[in-house]
Image (cartoon, rainbow, N blue to C red; front, top):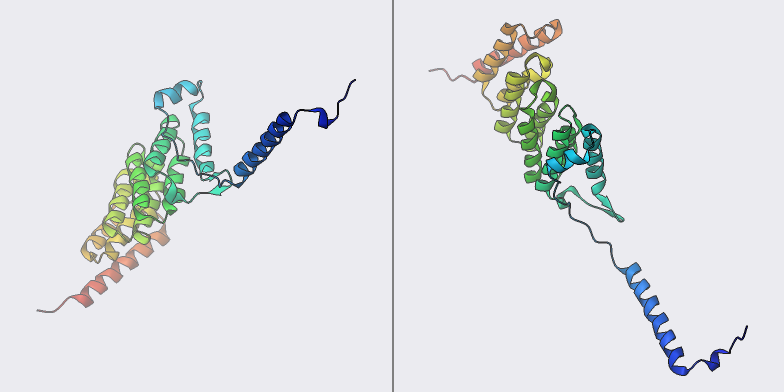
Length: 239
C-alpha cells in the first residue's frame, strides 16, 4: 500500500480538515454545556384514540398513562416542581386514565394526595374540584378521595365552607359505604365553623339513623353532643 506523508497533502485540504475537526469539537462541547430544557406536559390524547390504542386492554393503558404522568416531573436530569406543570392538561390526563378504567382508583388518589400537595392554592383547588366532579360518578367506591379532599380543604386551604360541602356529599351520597368517621366529618366541620346547632342536628341525625353500630362510636358521638350542648349553653347570653 502506498502511504504518502502528511506533507504531501495539499495545504488547503489540511486546513479544511483542521477547521472541520475544530468545528466538530466545538459543537460537541456546546451540546454538553447547554443546560437541559424542561418539556411542557403535552395535551392528553383524545379518548377515542386512546380506546383504539388500548387494543382491548383499557385498564392496562390507564396504568401506563399514570406511570407516564408519574415520571413526567423527572426528565433529562431535571426535577420539576408541580408548580411547573400545566394543571389543566394534568386534569385532562387524569380524566382520560379514569375514563379508561372507571373502577381504578389511582387517578383520584394521585389528584387528592399527590398533585394536591402543590404549593399553589389554585392548583390544589383544581385537583380537589376534579375529585369532587368524578366522585359523583361512583360515590360508594370513591368516597375516600372526597373525604381526603374535605380534610385538605379544612386544614391546608382553611376553607371550611368548601370542606363542609365535600363532607356533606360523602354523608349524603356514599351512605353506609363510607365508615362512621367519614359520615361524621360534616358535623365536626360545622362545629369548627361555630355552627353548633347544625353540628348537633347532624350528630343527632346520625345517632337516630342507626347507621352507627359500634358502641364506642355511639358513646363518642353522645359525649360530643353533650359537650356541644354545654358549650352552647355557656355561650348563650341571658336576656
